[in-house]
Image (cartoon, rainbow, N blue to C red; front, side, top):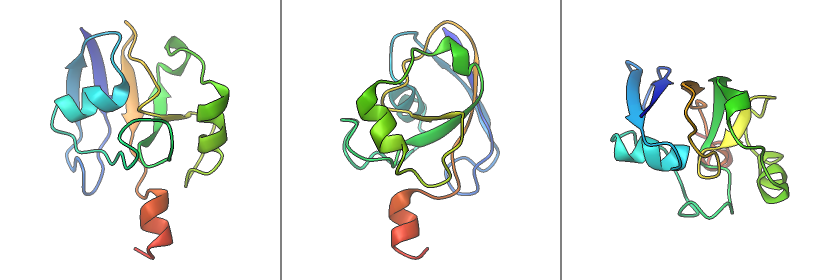
Length: 112
């Protein structure tokens, strides 16, 4: 099992948490399996940016993003060099520290 540290997020995970995930599943599925309700409007098909996360530690342990993911990441709110779509980032064997952005593109476009 791989340890994933989820940094605090005001609404989704106020205290932050540590979860365990099987290598080979998507980070999005790992979060959802641990009752961390990350948004995933396209049902994990790499067709939106609502599951965008920042990989604060362990980024290099993930397989590189493909062209489709990169194209969508360009549209993500709060994009930085450590950004990934959690539906496309596959958990490996190295621990990860992730941060869920305060807003998704849906929230920004709805003026939240």
